[in-house]
Picture 1 (tube, one colour):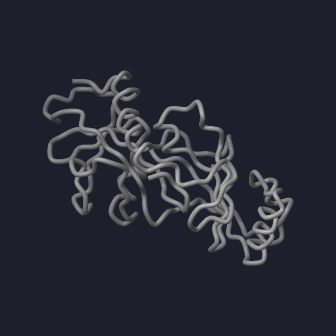
Picture 2 (picture 1 turned 90 degrees about the horizontal axis):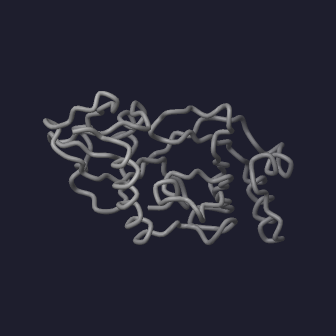
Length: 212
């Protein structure tokens, strides 16, 4: 039994379509506001599949606790990993207020370059974003004993995780302490093993406004 292209490209999006319908995007629109977010600028996802929408990183997310979160620029992003590469810069309270004022004026920055031009002195150094929680969805593929696809790396689901992969029916959140190491070591084509069963998993960092 192999985890072939048709499985990874069709079975998982079916699950995520259910998630998208049940949970929504969490945002009010391409430049909307959500809980914990002063500004949320999302890429155009209108023609994308549900799995792409689930893992999409904001073009720019400014949080009310002073963080600017965005996708790692092309050429700098870590490729081939299960979890998308996300960057963050701290922004001072004064910088958050500048962004809030720009939103009120109807002229918010649309990306990190525009934010730098607007509030550059209030921004701190770039860091990789390490979330406190991850969100994920899983779909059962079949018994591990029947699995014989050498091109699909297998990752053991952590025994310490408070949720088994057979449990969730929708998008689920778990603390980084429970699943962070497993997600960090998984490749984008990895499958997970839990209780002698193979699962395909879609995972992404969590942040204010993240769909789940």
